[in-house]
Image (cartoon, rainbow, N blue to C red):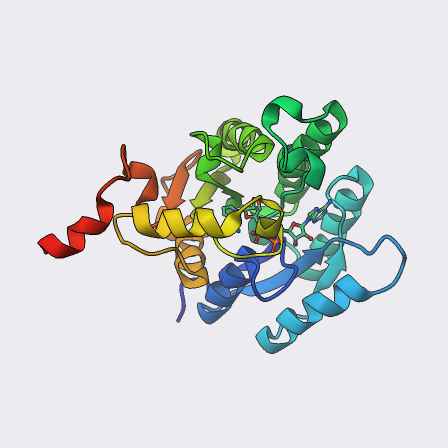
Length: 271
Ligand SMILES: NC(=O)c1ccc[n+]([C@@H]2O[C@H](COP(=O)([O-])OP(=O)(O)OC[C@H]3O[C@@H](n4cnc5c(N)ncnc54)[C@H](O)[C@@H]3O)[C@@H](O)[C@H]2O)c1
């Protein structure tokens, strides 16, 4: 009997085997969950994205894979109607989605454009609100939702730029959604994950440097793994966290507790 035996839910944001959401899917399935995936539709009508996701889904035994562009309200409505038809009621949703135009992400925040900012906020923040609204309609009371954030939404991280502003807004949206859905006993939390090499992360300038400095500066002296993220997200999506909502939980090897990252390496010599 696993932690998720008899539980059903949706994971939005798998694009390949490196996605944070893939780590979560693997863990939830190992604990007995039944899962469906959404994916970003191809603009040219070809099925490249669906085929990509299929490569992740097939070994996990996932057959519900449907397109959903979270910047389009009708897509979200249609997607969750299909979820209701196939699953009946669901118990959990993971929103693991972010996007901003490269030119607005790679430049100083000061130089980001109005259109780029609007798009970044729309796909990386508003989409969680729209998804929560649609998903709640097919969710059991006692269900849980999680979104993915990063420390760059709390403190300035060189290179994270405008996405840091989006993550700050996403974290606050998480708290307000937790307030709104609390009366239905639906919990809403965010996971603030340490950096991991993924497709979306490649948009962040000098990501290798970020990985390096996190590994050196974190109390655990390493970067997080997909397994770390999967298990902690599983905690937030399961009944194990039944009294926790509106929380931003760090899974970052402790990086965010540090006031200074100087001399961290010297600790190995002490113990
Ligand atoms: N990789 C990291 O270091 C890291 C750290 C902390 C938080 N995060 C967050 O985790 C989440 C997942 O990112 P990831 O790193 O796994 O990268 P990823 O590229 O694997 O996932 C990003 C997902 O967003 C989807 N997406 C983008 N625009 C969309 C749209 N309009 N409609 C539907 N889907 C759309 C992509 O298709 C993809 O599946 C993001 O919110 C990211 O900011 C990532």
